[in-house]
Amino acid sequence: MRCPRTGLGIFASSLLALVMALSGCSADRQIERARYLASHDHPEEAIRILHRQLPKINDTKQLCEGYVVLGDALVNLGRVPDAFTAYEKAMLAEPRALAPQQKTAELLVATGSGEKA
Image 1 (cartoon, rainbow, N blue to C red):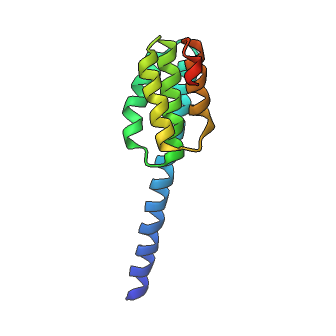
Image 2 (image 1 turned 135 degrees about the vertical axis):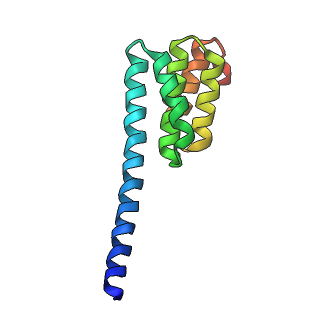
């Protein structure tokens, strides 16, 4: 009688692992979709997607990437202070990531605050 339970336990564990893996893939797809929209003159839609998706992300690398894309979309709309905040959140998620640091430095130079970069 233990054999069916063990089989069910393995099935449930496998199903849970599959659901967790697919949810991570979903976040990647949504971030890539937002990146595409932000770079193709639809930054508002990218921001909407990211505002829905970012609170669901637990992986720090994905979270960093999402905030970088959010910052890029905000820059496209001219919302520079909000973009700085997004890049800062990206750096908090992944302190060693270069992309948010580079984006922040570029934005500082572009806004005439190059000495802070």
